[in-house]
Image 1 (cartoon, rainbow, N blue to C red):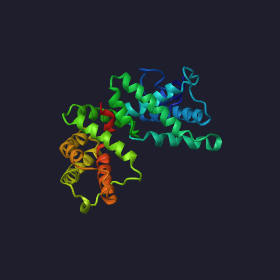
Image 2 (image 1 turned 90 degrees about the vertical axis):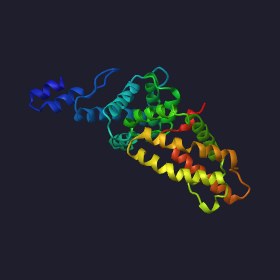
Image 3 (image 1 turned 120 degrees about the horizontal axis):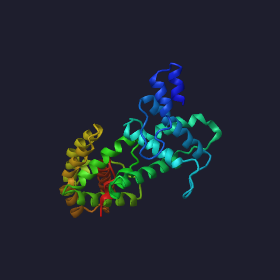
Image 4 (image 1 turned 135 degrees about the vertical axis):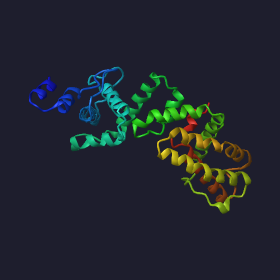
Length: 277
C-alpha cells in the first residue's frame, strides 16, 4: 500500500518501488528490491532489527526464532551477494550501531558468527562441498559478494595435481606456526638461508607470491591460486630436507619466518589447509 500511496502523491517510481520492496526478500526464493534505493532501505531495515535484537541478547535458540532473525540474516546475505554490493559485512553492521547508542551491548562478534553460520548452511544447500565452504569462510571474507568467486577458485584449485600436496603442506605449516613459542613474522634474512632447499623455497616464493598477490588484488582468485601451484616442488623439497626447529635460535626463527611468508601467500583466497584429507 505504501507504494500505491507514494505513486498517488507523485513521489515517482523509484521511491514507490523502494517503499514496496523494502521488506524483500520476505521468504526463500522471493524477489529482491528492484532498485538501489530499495536495496539500501531493505538492508537498513533488516540490519536494524538484527543489531537491536542481538544487542539486547535476544538471540534465536534451537527452533525458536519468534522475530525471524534467521530470515533477516538470509535476506541480508542475498542482498549483498546477488546484488554484488561492494561493502564489507562488518562495515554495514557497524552502520546500524549508532541508531541505538548506549542502549545495547556491541553485538558484532555474535552477529558475525550468526551471519557466517547462515551463509555456510546456504552454500552447502546450493551444492558446494563442505570442504570448499569451510576453506573460504574460515577467512571470514568481509565482502560476501566475493564468496562465489572464491569458491569457484577453490574448486578449480582442487582439480590441480599439485592441490593435495599443497593443501597438506599448508595444514602442516599452520600447525607448526601455532606451536611456535613466539609470534612469527613473515620476514626472512637471506644471509641465514643455509640449506639448498630453503634457498629454493625462498626464491620460488619471491617469484610466485607477487603473481598470486597481483591476481588477488584484481579479484582474479582462480589465477591467484593457480599461481601458487608452482610452489609444490620447492615446498616438498623443503620439508624433505630442512629441519625447521634448528638448534640455532636464529636459523629456527628465520625458517619459521619463511614458513609464515608461505602461509600468508597461500591463504589469501581461502584456508587451503581445510582441503587436506
